[in-house]
Image (cartoon, rainbow, N blue to C red; front, side):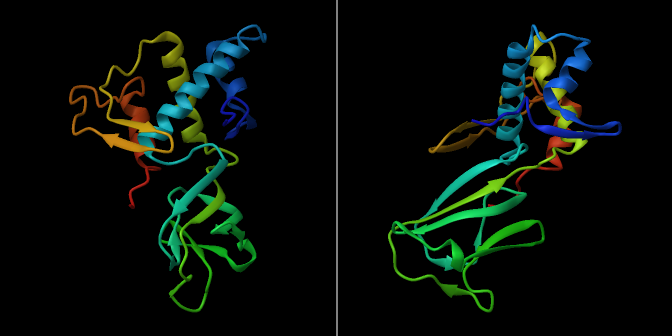
Length: 201
């Protein structure tokens, strides 16, 4: 479970949590609505990450592969903290490292050449993806989208993408041509999220 409400975000005045920043935007000074606002931030974070097909808040990620090529382009970025590389149930993380080029982070087992890892049935890579702290523009989008969920008044765009965990995603060839919004994510927020979208396969 990702703690969107507790995620740290950098603002011009310093750092704060997304929960505190959202409360400030709503002019809430006590903790009586913290649980509800945390839920709205969770909905905002989940929907924004689904639209981006990427991660915003730093979180653990596990990817499984059935091929043996190295280097392997990791699905999400920014990626850090390679925590496990299991090959057919055997831990091999000490033989691997991460490197980034052209905005894509790769897991690599042989830094001097492209090679085959060997014959195996399953390769599983665990790492951390997302931002810590969250950049201010992404933090602002999460705050605005959480408020949209609270008020159910902004956005009004059509659903563009649905993601089912551990199954896959479906992207629809539709968009709200009038507003540019996607669901409860406003058009200006979509333009920010587009800068952080995952574009590579």
